[in-house]
Length: 501
Length: 99
Image: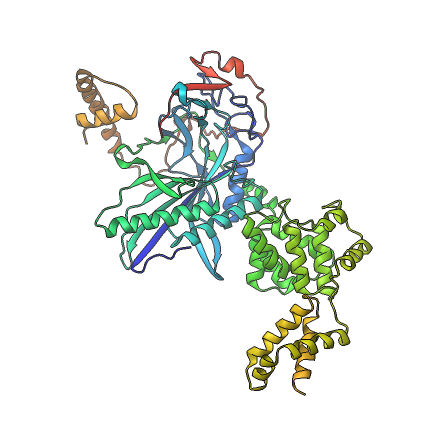
């Protein structure tokens, strides 16, 4: 991650298209299933054939209400659909039905935590709209044509727009992740970024530190992962600063992120920028949402992450930082709750989820419910054994890592099975076979300590002359000599005793 | 406010309409007439009034009809594409779209 050069401030706002998890489209009864054969899910309404009219999907509205409530925004009692006019082959009507002056949700905020510091990102609005179709070029180049698949046309979207509140690529990614966590938590969006269910556009500008006015912004499109979002913004920040420092000027334009080259390039500039000529769609009356409807949606909502986080703090005496991480996604919180229900202490489960497991998941870029994760039953046995002191944390960690790399053939035999329950007796046998049981027999540890002291006279000398660091190095040697199996507390104690005599 | 011929060219470009200089002159006149009518309307003080987003709302109180989230459409690709000038593998083919 590169830091912003001194003397510059970065300003970022995000627009996110979240695909609402509805069975049918926003204005027609066509299915929204991903991956169907081209144009098999495009009805006469989606194709804009003459004489057809749109009828709004109630569920899409309820999902928008749910989102508005979750972010503390205002649900507009009266909102209006508008036509956004432009010509493109994947937009058969020649306009997209969206909302302009009167969106369904106004305001709201999303809390993010970055490097342990909490910050709030203000939302401008969230509005309902339909998705466009897809243009395909592959395999058609020689014919000089493009293929149009309108299966996606009319898919329900909620576009969520922030204020220009973010000041670094890392903050923008933290916001995108928090928003992703929230919409999947609410169950209003499946969050699948590969399939385009959650797409971010970033508005990026730079200005000299202290300048009040915003710099000219560019909009980056086509970002379909958090990693790419961060890279695309960082590239764009560098590009804009270099441009200005070289005496140039940023031109307001839309830029496309190319992941292969790790750069953004101009898509269309302001010269031929779109003038969408929005106007209220005469095919649709204003959407009226009364208080009773909002109440009904509210009563069907799941416990929100912020509320659950507070509950974890009071029920399990967790730090607010830990509780925040545990409620970052529905999958993580469910994992935590299920694990604690098996009897492993909340403290141990938290340490694992926010430590080793998080490291693994971040490295792989996957979620906790990914099939690459060792099964819950294995993890339950592992955490329980570690908590009981049957195996040391060091051994448990190594075991976990070997599972993650799927290096452990014995495990595959044991689990035959990953995902199935593992009997306690089976598990105990597994620990014996692997020789992982922690050593807490005093005479065995004493023997190891004696050997380590004999082999490291220099460290002993240093410790006796007052160097505390030498003690840690000796502890490390003892752990290493025991292959990580010595009970660390006992090893410490015995070492201290031997050194002081 | 009145339009100039540059506005007509811009609007024609946005609407993908090719117009001749003679048509431009005629449209300029017609559109400016419409504009002056709009100006008359805009002279009315509407402060404090709720915006009227649909003409039907003056006649009677109506609200948007909604449908349940149920799939009701079955596949009709063949029939739907029967008028497509060019198609292949279920795709509509159009002149190449340049990014």
